[in-house]
Amino acid sequence: MASVETASAPRDGHRVASAAESGQRGGDIVCSGLYKWFGDSPVIASLDLYVARNQFVCVVGPSGCGKTTLLRMMAGLASIDSGTIAISGQRVTEPLASVAVVFQHYGLFPWKTVFHNVALPLRAAGVTKGEAARRANDALKLVGLNDIGNQYPAQLSGGMKQRVGLARALAIQPEVVLLDEPFAAVDAQTREILQEELLALWSRYQQTAVFVTHSIDEAITLADRVIVMGAKPGRILDDIEVPIGRPRSVASVRRHESYAPLREQIWEQLRGSSTAGGERG
Ligand SMILES: Nc1ncnc2c1ncn2[C@@H]1O[C@H](COP(=O)(O)OP(=O)(O)OP(=O)(O)O)[C@@H](O)[C@H]1O
Ligand SMILES: [Mg+2]
Image 1: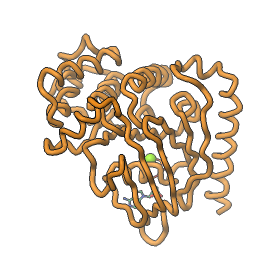
Image 2: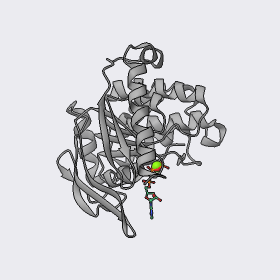
Image 3: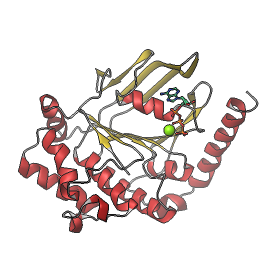
């Protein structure tokens, strides 16, 4: 289900490699005074958000509040009408090589094997063949797919395709990875397994991550911070720290004493936002 979009021009390849080699993988994200209009009404208004290097931030909010729009602006895939976004100090005006995006739909190359689906973006980013193979195998092993590197996407289940997408995004070792509901279309059990694998991948690669989800459980499981957005116009209602240490597992998060109160807090915010921004205007 995941598709990865990166600016893969070789001219920028050195930025990907140097970020990984220096050990400073994450980049920070600074959104200042963001506005986005579709037609006459602003979809995003006066939005400020700072995401520190190597932080994992989840964004939750009612349908239509502008989560995808915000992510697309960060990815350089949607124009910014007013305000600025900078990633690692670089102003976003187009897709940056240091940023990978994982969407809900698959976007794997059907005519390439699993291994080549992961290795290809690395080669496009200027990584040598041997290093690309090493990184692709490493990432596939982390998501439990190292045995099926020779298979083609059509031979895989939805959950497996999503794993290939995740491995591909993180193996590029971008400074920032942006994920828009990547697990929304898989069954509940597969979703928990994928969350577990993403926790493992993230602790291995430590990129800065912004992950959009409708699931409060998923947000608490994965995030250092949960950003709660409200609608009409899209804005930040709350910015909640998740006081649960790492390494984490889905089970350890659910057992944590902070889990239930956090869940309740976020749920209350969302309930408030959907009535304030929705029917009651
Ligand atoms: N290209 C577009 N043209 C016009 N309106 C758009 C466009 N893209 C998004 N919108 C509108 O902007 C608002 C925010 O959309 P967006 O997709 O960012 O919401 P979202 O929070 O991601 O919703 P969901 O949770 O359903 O995915 C919606 O009202 C949507 O209809
Ligand atoms: Mg969306």
